[in-house]
Amino acid sequence: MAQRGLMLPLFHAAFLAAASSALPLAAQSDQPLSAIDWLSQSVEPPVAAAKAPSKPRLNEPPTADGAGTPQIIVTPLDAVAPDAIGTLAQADTGLPVTLWSASDSDMLATLIQAQSEPELPALHDLFVTLLLAKADAPAGDAGALLLARIDKLLDLADLTEALALIKAADPIEPALYRRWFDVALLTGTEDEPCAAMQTAPGLAPTYPARIFCLARSGDWMAAALTLNTHRALGDMPDDEDALLSRFLDADLVDPAAPLPPPDRISPLIFRMREAIGEGLSTGPLPLAFARADLRDTVGEKARLDAAERLSLHGALSPQDLSRVMTGVTPAASGGVWDRVDAFRKFNAAMNDGDPDAVADTLPTVWSAMQEVRAEVGFATLYAAPLSQIDLTGPAAQIATTVQLLSGDYARAAALPDVPAFVRAAALGDFTGVDPRSSMEEAIAAGFADTAPPQVFADLLAEKKLGEALLRALPLFDAGVAGDARSVTDALLVLRRAGLNDVARRAALQLLLLNRTL
Image (cartoon, rainbow, N blue to C red; front, top):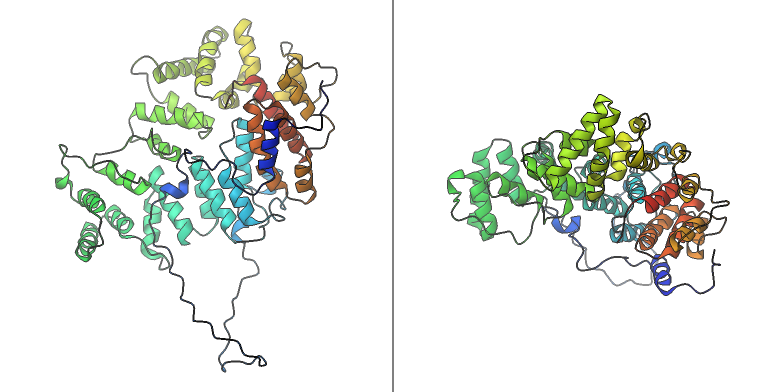
């Protein structure tokens, strides 16, 4: 294998430079809308108290201006700092509670905001784990890290996890309520935040949110009065007036003259347009909106399209994908309907325990899962039962791949038809195995007894584990795109951080999945 020289390849050097910088790694203008761009303006921002004009200081000893009691800020000793809040404890993540504490909160927030969706499922899972981990708060702006984590979960369309993180904090705090309200709108659970809006004096709802919630509670008279009041005050834009008027009065809906597309989309606009029969397709909208199409009130084709889109981005659990695909009957042929048919036939064969039917249907369903990048989720569901079925030929080879992509990859490595290099990756031991390509060389080097690049070694020595991992994730994606050396360095970081299981699963997925950037 080639020796690691002193000169870095130009592409690889650029990524290491980005990893050592505090600036965003992927803040491009053509990126999909971030959560902060499409959140509803459901509450008014708090008004900062005006500061008294400063007085010139005189050279005199400090004295009190009066006999009044000075203002004292009291913080309960058992209060949890916002940035320390998480839904996964150390026992679940295997990550130390010092994950964030040695870093600066603004730096971490910047790295999280700049992070693209990791390409490999193993790294996607690691990223989500980092976002959900319960750990000591870092220094800096309190709450910045929590909001960055929640917003990234919204960008990734992990709405269930985002909601759990919001509720673990204080969902009535305006910035968190804004996110709670929108998650509820996209999942059809808006009654709870609407009820909170009526009883929380600290919230200052905007009039569209207030009107929506009043109508949801059945108080149409109060909703109409609120609308008319703001119309009379002249603070109602024409587009909002038209939408809210139709939302409250179905007689105003004119199928022959639908509303024009909104200039700015938000979950509140999305739901109100849906209510008046002028719903918007979620296809061109940010990924999180696809979650709205998983509701049982949505048509089967839209539900299937949403499930596949979410699966392509690693944002749908295997159980949910299975529930959607087995819950419909193919109504046509081609595209998604063929994939549904393949999944249903294979699932039926597995339930019947029929080896011949499994062998007949496995190649077709595996091809379907590859099309929507659901191979690892499929392995989660079927690796164990497939290991109990005696298969031969192409079906046996696929079954072996499925098992290697599961959590039981070490046991699967002992199967007789596993290639030597794949077996070595599963075991993390490349002794006596000769790489046959530059990428295989890079993977093997990532499991050598070698220190990671100095920038990462320094971060790990300074106990900045979370920061090191956030910088290593885009480095691995550079490797998936073809920069083999980046794979080596990312694997070295993962292993030095004690994440050997993640390193092995990432290596296996890089070898077994067809992932290109």
